[in-house]
Length: 358
Image 1: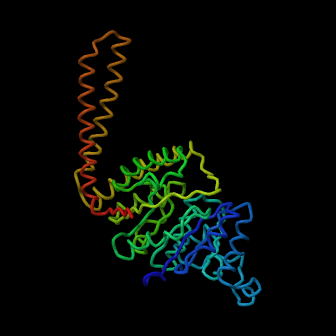
Image 2: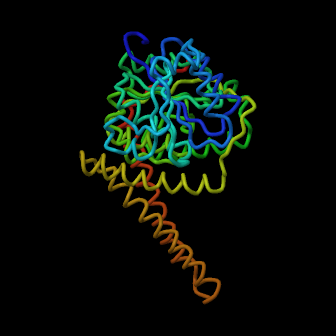
Image 3: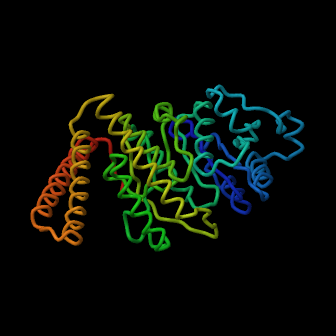
């Protein structure tokens, strides 16, 4: 328990042999449950996880067997999570604080987080944190993510490695560049305009937000954290952005960046359109949604008109002035509507964001 709140931690693990044990053994004492998801690892991740779980519990393997807590590798999940948890994973008996979970098939980082969230929701913990299985997260910093939720200042808290130069000094330049681009795109898609570093997997979420986030539809690729922000904004949840230094060790990223950028960009566009429809047309009404649609359409028409003007001038010998002027006017007008839409979006969501700098 932490400040009278039960704490669960979701730990996705795929080929994390050499790291996952240290993460489990280093978990703070106030954590009540660790939901460790083995995403069909091909190395010794599962055995190392069980060994660390027994060490954390202070019991031997023989004691676990004698106490009736032995792991039943054929047992189905015993939760009522709409059948989804049972379909995707085998949930074993707890070993001390650790709930070992085996995926039936490899579902990726987002899929593992989703499985862990489903298990944590069924377990009824008050706050659920997420920690990578590769040891990147400083576990001593976890209370900084929990405090905004405990103090009812936020429903979801996430770490931010980009706010200060010294915090991101250890981040590889290419990763920083890609993260900065995704930060900007996620601001537009999610409506959380002050939030940075959306790819950060060090987070905490309240049980209320977890119940209302639409877990069943959560994106299951690496962009799950971006998709979660979009869903939380549509439901009016408060988000805290907590400044925290980056921590890198000997882990190797399994991300394929070309497919990652393509898939996540498409997800952000779909999520953005869904958020506008859900938040500003279905659950409530605000003209900013119409500003976005009209602005994008008009600006797009201006671009097409400009391309046609260039074609007629270069290949048909016609005057560029009139057609070029009209296309510029259309593009400028559309851009202005988009800027107004963004401004309205910032104003609507201002009260839902908190930045914790120290």
